[in-house]
Length: 474
Image (cartoon, rainbow, N blue to C red; front, side, top):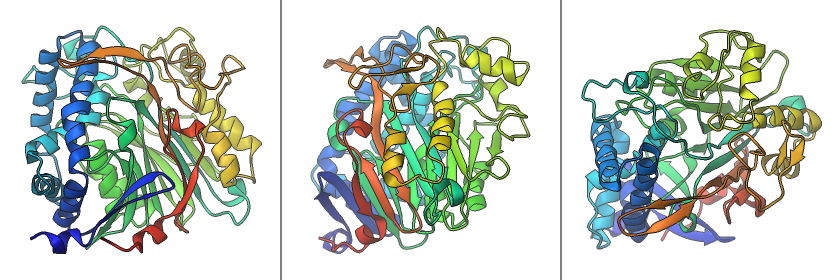
């Protein structure tokens, strides 16, 4: 009955990497996704999502049942904030999973797709109070939380022209760092989307989600997300996975990509690193529910990089405009930041266990200078797997986690594990590198580390987006 839809999609494993290729309308792509990954989606909903709620429970010092209620309420608020094309894809995922014999509803898929947005809201010590019906997302009215999750990673850089060297083609590199919740490490996938309308594109994600941290498209546009907390956060907006998919689907140049984040309602504080390989340019848009600020490369500079704290401080790194750093001051428990030196000094405080590894930003700057004109894939791999902390002047040993968020927390993230409890199990989890992507979007060549944890310590495997799009279907 569903053969015509399923014949357009395929599920392959090459070099040990799982790839789902989806083609057709958004509903058809969702159906292929849901049918071919039904068992894995069920694992996400039955095992991984309760684990995510356990993280929230520990963060809020609630019991698991109350955290589940908060999670459900947050998902309910978010339901109306999904664009029609991706809502159709979610409907297809649910229908495909049901056709494969799993009782999975659209509401469950919608709820699962809010997981990382809710993780961002609850990851810092001042949280959005979902139980307050008057809440508009500005958390100080709701008071401070009581603990801080160890580890907040993700980072990226892009380089082109003389910085990249060789033929100067733009290279885009990103580390996705997050928790290894139960069920996730075995279910890391490349998703290839070939829609009837819009740009074919690649994104990295978990089963059942329509997007997560971005990827790149056949028009040469790349997108990466970095947690970039703000005092202005809400679930009344598009999620980070939805926004990155929209940018990859619709953008053919840098400004179109930036407009995706400027023109749509947003949820949590995120820095979106966008690059345009055809025009050899890039920008980072730091965005909260209320504010967007855009940082372009410094004059006569052909590279850009981003970590998890705001760089949009007027006068710093060539930026002018709204001071987004002020929206992070309370979130990251910083002291006075009345000027740039004071801000940078506050970021360096070793016993601030909240601010997420600002040393990595300085390390990127050093490495991009060191490898100037020689940013080949091999050297990009060295950068993305680097374990040197410029604040302590020490290299963290491989296999040894950092001490805190701000001591030996390096570009290759690996934080201490913590214990969490669901009604069915206790488990240990910590933040480290889930996957690392090095891409030449113009040619479609990319190198992916997606094995082990941290993945960027396990080696990279080469693929090509255009070749994957030509793969035979089922």
